[in-house]
Image 1 (tube, helix red, strand yellow):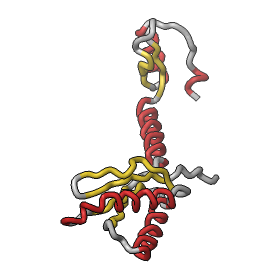
Image 2: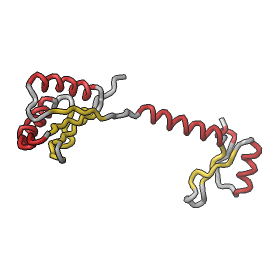
Image 3: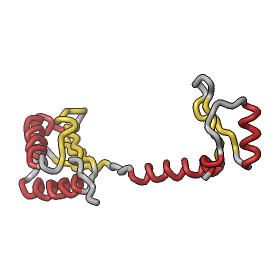
Image 4: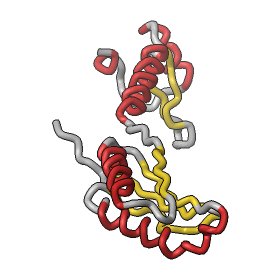
Length: 156
């Protein structure tokens, strides 16, 4: 290993560069703001390669969350509600965010309270699969509620 061949200490820049050249390696500045600046003798291309490899590993471990939508009407029938609730459960189990909304057409906007009750009922029934990020809120002709999946611990 390179660290075994190199002495640790405070060296003038020329000496450090000379030692790096003798070893056929590069002199990299690790901490420029320190007094004196900290440098390290290493294979710079290998250092960059290892850094990219670490970034790629971290990126692959991050979970990509997508948003799934479920649309209801203010007078959605019980069977339709149960059918859509099953889909919502599957979305949350798969780790997706859920956007459930009630769409009001024409004069059905007078049933705002029914839409809110429907979304709150859904939130209550999906409580074990996800948590509510945004309570039902009317935006134009839609009453929207956002849910996020409950964090699942990875099994090793």
